[in-house]
Image (cartoon, rainbow, N blue to C red; front, side, top):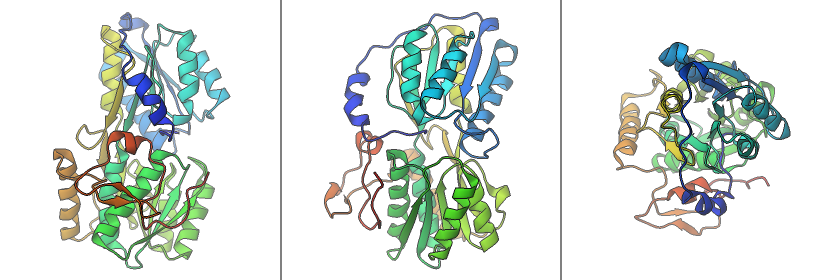
Length: 362
């Protein structure tokens, strides 16, 4: 979905040096902006936040733009059909908001060179295709610190979607941070192979709690894991949007994706003719693309202070989620002491760090 895979390193060199292209300005009254969503707008997670950003575009630009969206579009061939239909119906700017839309977006963009395309979390770009994503692992670092301090069982439960670098990166960042403040930490992972399936997500959360986890984290899009934690009297951390309403007692915080500023900026650029293709944006805490929901009042003040110090440190560059020395599961040093993971390693991460049990599914 929203994600990079391990092949990114093979393609990055080819695209990073490509030239940029300006797209011809359009008349404001003619600009139609389209959004392709992988889930329903009511998932209260990933797609919900993208649609909230669409609404912010309307608020910011008013009659200058008209927006439309198609929700619950499967990744693959069907995505190409939907994107093609949107591009052929007069849309001048199209946001495709799932990793699995990458190849379909590139394919359709070749047929519509005058349309500006923005693809979330992919790595393939062209003269009329940009990519963008959030450094969600920065949020995972902070919530990992909180989880490491708040757990009583020393077992964290993680509901994971698909074994792609973004999800693996998040698991590693969470575990490394938690273990840095609690050496006894263990993490149990259940892969559900879906982005949005409340039933599967709930079942995974129940199983993790039965296995001893007293804090549930997720990289899926519904609030089902949060709701299970609430019913079972456990802690939980939300994903993509503020999920506090779904687990008032369970909710410690949530990692929030704020796409609105980026969407407004890109739309303005198309309107005034300054939009450039073949660009990549990877924003985090510093840019505001990644945020945290208010901390639970149940979190001790010293833990909140620790979390805030880390968040601010990430912003000023004094803290990094992947600071060496770090070993992989085999004991091999993958990040040396005094060094940090570069964006290449982060974007293509396909290994568990030392201490994580289990194997990454193929």
